[in-house]
Length: 134
Image (cartoon, rainbow, N blue to C red; front, side, top):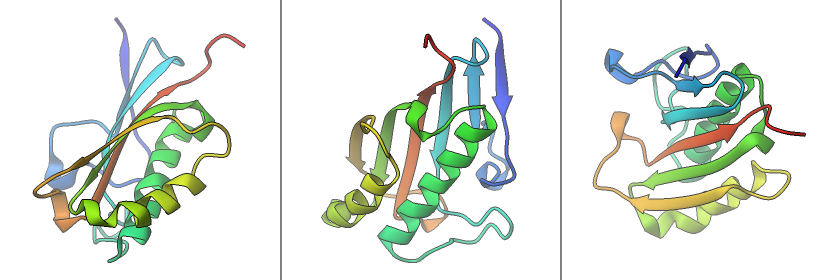
């Protein structure tokens, strides 16, 4: 299977030089697995927002940037996983998340975790299928 890394400057590089890609496309133009995106400003590496809504918006902007770099759009996202530091913030995250998808939203799992990289409150990973049958 041929795989290629997807990289965009519109989303942060792996945290602390960790060994992972922003995304990997297998069978180029079909399935893209997007690594977990934390709400870091790509230019400074600092948290882009303090609140859950702002962090969710930033994570989704990174997902959008990566899927666009792969040649797709948010309509091509078929599955996401949202990792949250505090599930009591679910409604706030969910309201922002709903704005990110114009059509039918993708399948999703939301998981409460003990900690996230860079002291983030939210992290979002995704899978997109790009350029499939018309």
